[in-house]
Structure formats: C-alpha cells, structure tokens
Amino acid sequence: IIYTALLLIIYRLQSKIMSSSYKKPGFDSKYFEQLLNSLPALESKTIAITGTTSGMGFIAAEACARLGAKVILLNRPSPRSDASFAKLKMNVSNAQFYKVDCDLQSFESVRASIEVINELCPEGLNVLCNNAGIMAFRDEPTIDGYDVQMQTNHLSHFLLTKLLMPKLEEAAEKYGEARVVNHSSVARHQQKELKSEYLESRGGKLGGDGSSMFFSGARWVRYSQTKLANAAFTACLHEKFQKSNSKLKAMVAHPGLAESDLQSSSVKDGGMGSFFTRYLMKLGQSEKDGSLGLVRCIADPKINSGVIVGPGLRGLKGKAKAFPLEKFYDNDNTKSLLWSKSWEAISEEFNI
Image (cartoon, rainbow, N blue to C red; front, side):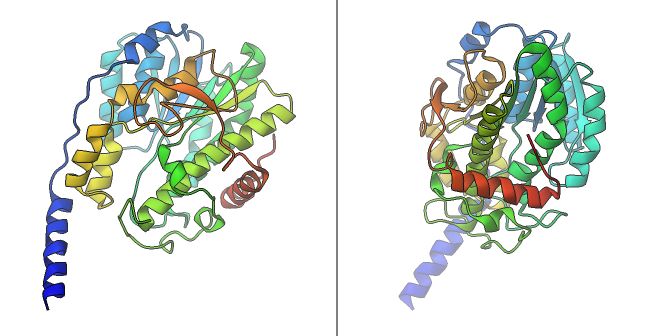
C-alpha cells in the first residue's frame, strides 16, 4: 500500500512538473558577432534553408542576408512562417528573402516545392542547409507512414537534396564549389548504431511515448536515431562527392546545448518536463551561439567537406570548431544502410 501511494505521489508530481510552463533562459551571445564579422560577403550567392521560423534556422537566414546572399526560406505554410518572414524582412530591410512552402512531413509537399526553388536559382544553388528538426515527439506516423521525427529530420531532407542536386552542381561549376549542410546534435551519441526500423514505414509502431532522456525513453531513442542519420548522411555525401571528383562539399553542424524552440515544443508535446528543462538549460548557450557551427558550414571558406562543426564533439557551449567525421557513423555498414533505406523511403534512386 505504501509503495502504491508513493508511486501515485510521484506520478502526480511528475504530471504537475510536465504541465508547468517553460520559458527560455535568454542567454546573451558571446561569439556570434565576432564570427559574422570575420566571414566574407555572400553577394551573388543563393542559399536555401529549411526550418527558419525560429531558432538557429532563423539566425542563420538572417546572417546570410546580412552577408548579402539571396535566401530561400523553406517552411510549411503557417501563420508562424508568415510572421517570421515579416520579421526577417524588418531585421534586414535590404535583403532578398523568398518564402517557399515546403512541409517536411509530406514527400508530396517537398516535391511540389522544387519547381519554385528552381525558378529562384537561375544560376544554381550555392548552399542547401538541411536545418529543420523536431525533438522527442510522440510515436506518430506522417501522411507517408514514417516516424514523424525521422521524416522531418532526415528522410525529407534526403529527398530535397536529391531533387536539388542539379542546381547544386550548376552552382559548383560556376563558383568552384557548392555545399550541402546538415544539422545534427550531441544526441547522435546516445545511439551508436543506426537501425533500419527507424528508417522504415513503421511510424506509430516504434516504441511508444516514453520520455525519459536518461533511461532510453522511446521518444529520445527515435530522436537520437534521426541525429545519427543526419551525420551518416553527411558521411555518405562526402564519400560520394570525393569518389566522383565533384566540386560539391558536405558538412554537418551541431549546436551543443542551445536554447531554441526545440525545448519549448518538446515540453508542450510531453517529451521533456519543464522543471527539468529549466535546470538543464542552465548549462547551455544562446540561439546565436548555437548557430555558430551552422553559419560556419554555410559561409566560412575555411570549412572543408567531411567535417562536423560545433563546440567540441560532445561540447555543450563555446566557439564552433571543425572535427573529422566520427567512425561510429562514418563506416561502410552505416553508410550503406542509411543510403539504401533512404532510397526505399523516397521511392527514387539517388545517384551521384
């Protein structure tokens, strides 16, 4: 009876904590302006970025515009997308921002966006930044039947990259290089092995809604699989670009522990408790400093293909530095699995 009573008290306390509000800590940036001032102009360059309504995608889009680039904003249509578009135009009044509807939870929507993107890139696409992501969401399928996290974070980016490859190659020939930038996380270390079931049409049947970050809760297993996939995708692209003597480059960023709407949306969806999140985020850094790796991958000429850029390989905050890709995903078995399963998901061959 006592044991049952204790469980009931813990359950009620956890429910109260989970339902309480979470507010971002509002860190000051330490390094962002210094980095931005060190980067060359991006005039005449065209950069497409997914997930720019908030967080590091928004920061990266604004930074590229400040450096003179034409910036294509790829988001699913929503009032939030409209509001962020207006805010970007207000923040950088002379910038070239173009809003394109692209819902990463629908392969059909991704395909429908390509014609519009191509029209905006008459001289090619210099950078495709696969930034958008969701974290610790429920075990739910997309309209295509895949896990909502895996399709949003990786599979639709795989399709987008495939469909925009001609425009990337066009820019590489004209400018000497073009880049595919992916966005991973320190969460890639939580799952050292990429597993095929998370890349298959098993959405809603991948472990349920366990939310414990430290005891392999199913939400976090699925999320870390997506972040491992982001890094493995980069390793695949780098290898294929090298073997084909391509002028294309592939690199991946990670933000450390940076405040963003990822935490807020995860708390709202039940993936993180607000009490725990508030204390965890005290170890973190600002959105701007979290975007250092992403911005360097997009715009820094010193960043080469085949690297991961962030505040240390497991670092939570600080300046973003480049490191070689890690062997636990940059190996033949992982790359072969990632590429073949992603092909199957999009129902299209992707040859480089």
